[in-house]
Image (cartoon, rainbow, N blue to C red; front, side, top):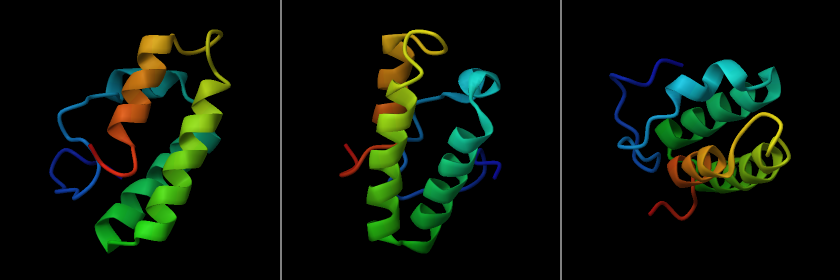
Length: 83
């Protein structure tokens, strides 16, 4: 999903992780797609669950794929409750 022209209600628009997406395995990209869909549909339960899952699965990519700073960026962008 291309999110530059979409208005999300919970995803932090001001945090840009697009430059990190090339590093992400397919399952992480699928989780982000699911988070974006849940946000657009207003599905709080799915949004919260997949955000929690994303936090865990991206943490497993530290330090081989992501730095701690990059991981924190993902957690802040896709957090619940939204900050």
